[in-house]
Image (cartoon, rainbow, N blue to C red; front, side, top):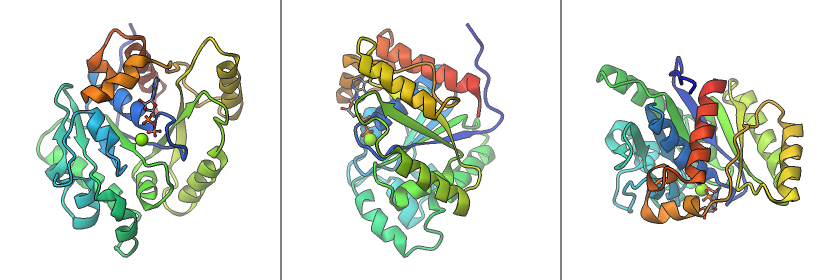
Length: 271
Ligand code: ADP
Ligand code: MG
């Protein structure tokens, strides 16, 4: 087995794709759990008002929970709202609540509206250092499907973009829009942002269609596509209803193994 080294600095990923239902949240939850399982210190920041990543990692996110909303709008610190994932060591979560739905509008009139997540995360990284806590190795930000101010905040706070692509008809639909938005962010707000990783999800090795999608995606992103693909798996789909990642729900399942492998590949490729 290859040894997995800690990155020399915290790697921050935004998990983004304008299409809904392509596996953004599932990949955020399970890659984060897999990296923690591999021994890394991992933080998930949920900025989707649905709060599915919070649910999937077993962290409370009812309306009265202090959450990323309070960080972005009311200047609470991340340290004040972060919660430990109950069944995975080294994994913590900044939850989202339904209040976030209003944040898109509330952010508009705030100072530094595009940088609020970045500032809060920087502050949290400094706080951990001051407290003598171990450095975070990986941070994943789970985005809503829209390209509003919440997603802009994620693009500004991250250096890497991870795009999950579902191996289905119209897999590449909307991607050019996403890429031109990323371009705009690079130009005006975050010059170091890059699409570093493409993860193929819901892959079915038995169909020609899946193979075609893989070829097409590789044509566009020859260096970014991970070799590990995530298969369609009942275990992956079931795990959230037990408020668990597939890593803790059924670690021996093909779905869990695929995410553990994809996570190892992300580590080995580096940033
Ligand atoms: P997004 O966050 O992009 O909207 P989700 O991660 O919520 O997408 O996934 C959409 C749906 O597909 C969910 O019901 C999820 O459980 C299911 N799903 C995601 N990945 C897989 C997979 N590899 N196998 C089976 N079901 C999956
Ligand atoms: Mg989602």
